Amino acid sequence: MEPMKPKIKEGMFVKRGSFSGRKDIKVEDLEVRPGGMIVQRRSTSESNQISVAIPTIKVRVKFGSFYREIRISSQASFGELKKMLAEQTGVHHQDQKLIYKKKERNSKAFLDVAGVKDGSKIVLIEDITSRERRCLEMLKSARTEKASKSLQQISLEVDKLDGDVYFA
Image 1 (tube, rainbow, N blue to C red):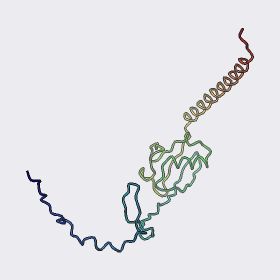
Image 2 (image 1 turned 60 degrees about the vertical axis):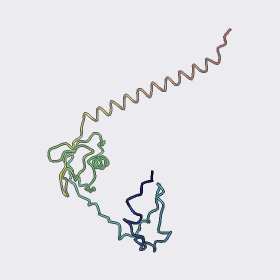
Image 3 (image 1 turned 30 degrees about the vertical axis):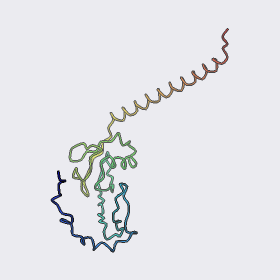
Image 4 (image 1 turned 135 degrees about the horizontal axis):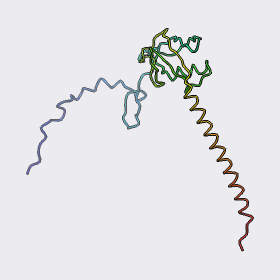
């Protein structure tokens, strides 16, 4: 039997001189990617980079009878806002509830997705149950830490006494 001849002829889809316009590329303009592919190096000029400034908004937060004005990125999360408020109000960020448009907002939700705009009003409420829960967890961890320290001291004393005991 005769070997089959390919139906596609060499150079059928690609002209031989089609890459002739690429001769002006220098070796310094090339880089090797981790997979071994050689590619043309990206230009670092600022004309090629598109930079969009993220707008900063001013939010009015009511806590008790006081209003606080906070400047924050419009794409920040409510959790980031809580951390900024914790510095100013002294209320731990886990003990805060932020209410916007009569709904409590999750810490992972973003301000712009929730519809917060420049000059929007947000209400901050201190969550007493979460503060109590956090205090109970602190007491429990302190109790376990104290128990582990006493166990360490007892084991050290047992090790000291173990060296003093002789078997007959």
